[in-house]
Image (cartoon, rainbow, N blue to C red; front, side, top):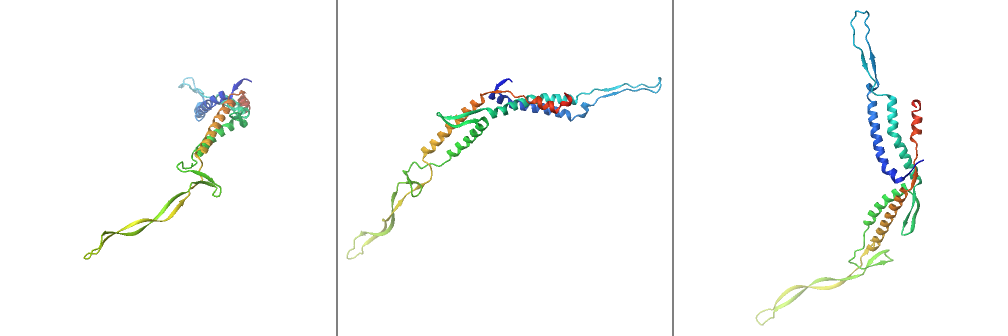
Length: 248
């Protein structure tokens, strides 16, 4: 058997599928035209030698059923073989996923590598949406609350208390003149502690970094698996020899 690399097969299989489907569609259109398969030979013989003659009529067959089957076979044969080669190779092509020398996944089939690669894209998006702690606060882990807690801040609670201010002192002939106003007087103290279940920004960034490293490792493993040398599998002739054996 001849040898190829899986990435070479992958590069051509979609084109062969498109061409095979297009060619088969054209053959199918011809099958809908019954007149292409029909021929005619018609001659006229007068009853006596002096009788009127008529020109013969001829219609040649334009398309044959056997020809259609041969064309269908030709259109699909290469597609059967290249798809078989790809599917057989996908069962054999494997590679390790390594990050900085550490094997994360061992002997992974190329089809699963494709799955992991797509999932890591979604996982990266998910982690990127995780909330992070407000950098304006100082946070520490609170065991009792099982979350992060900020430093406690203090603020006064005040109450407006009416006061009076003497503008003019009283005299023997005039009463005192005073002005009313309100003064803010401290009556208590607020103690505020904020809580958060968000992640530290550094922790989220580290997770995102590990995902990106894993993405690179999976892509590298997939390329390595796809570059493995594989045997070309021939199945098309076996299929069509069985299906069309009456015409072979």
